[in-house]
Length: 451
Ligand code: ASP
Image 1: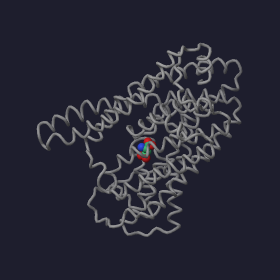
Image 2: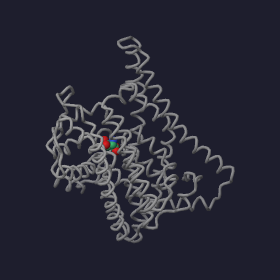
Image 3: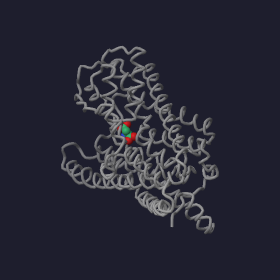
Image 4: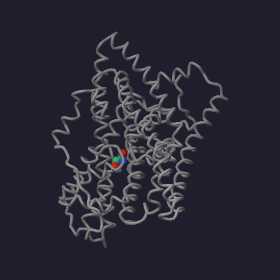
């Protein structure tokens, strides 16, 4: 799709002036999103600290601002983003399969991607365990229970999880936003279109057109991002103030440090040495996606943005990105695995439980599986953490201890989660010859405007 758009652009060369204007517009959008983030933070703190507790003003702020304007506008924005997920995955992936033509390359692509997602998650959790083991954030804390216990949810058995990947009803899969099922359905439809000659081509052309429209919609929604980000971040800080950042400092520090290590160490190494791409350019272009992930704490809600950047600014072909990004959003959560690793060591230490090599190995395996099973929505990592804790005999109630500080960690780890998806996508695309280096390197590359 991107290709057809791109060639469309080349056919109609834009004037330099127009290009300059467009570039300017894009810069201000990234900047405006950042401004929204900063102002949201400031507004949140104002709402938290200015009205004295119990005052009329505090009640008014709570009712009309926090639970009023901020809640409504933030939710509307997240809904608008989420509204794009199913159409984007379905249409874009069908186009991707059509473009990859022979389904053999899809198999190779799938294997490579899955393998890289698994390896990076394994590295993430190992790093987290090492950091937590050295720092020992739980030292000095003993769990005599001054926290609200957490009630773990039942998890479906593994076999059922496997069966559930295959939809028995595609409409239901779409209605429920079950991304893995939608991926399977889209791939099957794509393969069928490839094998039905003229009929397939006609329908395929319609999907290609639809894809342009869907991408345009993503761009339109992007324009609202500065406001959306403002309301989302404002509400979070208005409710908890800076307390969000205090307390359990050692635990938070450990998680953030391990996230940072993985981000700079693992990702940038993979980009530089495996994909042979400039990590600085990558980071610069990913900035809007990072801000989205941070504000929404949901990789799913951020997915349309990640996909747009990877295709249009990093030069990855739709045939790769349409598959790897939705898959990564669903199963690849390195940031979540890191939090789970640190949390396990922290809780074990707070309970005075020694973890041996066997326990560490089992944490690595379970946290990798847990991050695959974690839904790409806020706080989902806390639910699957219960599974990891259970594996080494720690009580799920202990999650109550770290729940209070999880929000801000969730925001940061979501940004790491989506970075992992983009890094693997670029690496796989590179190895498949599906990454346009000139687009990647071009600092001025502007988003291709359909139509
Ligand atoms: N919020 C994370 C995400 O959407 C999942 C989690 O760790 O809670 O990527």
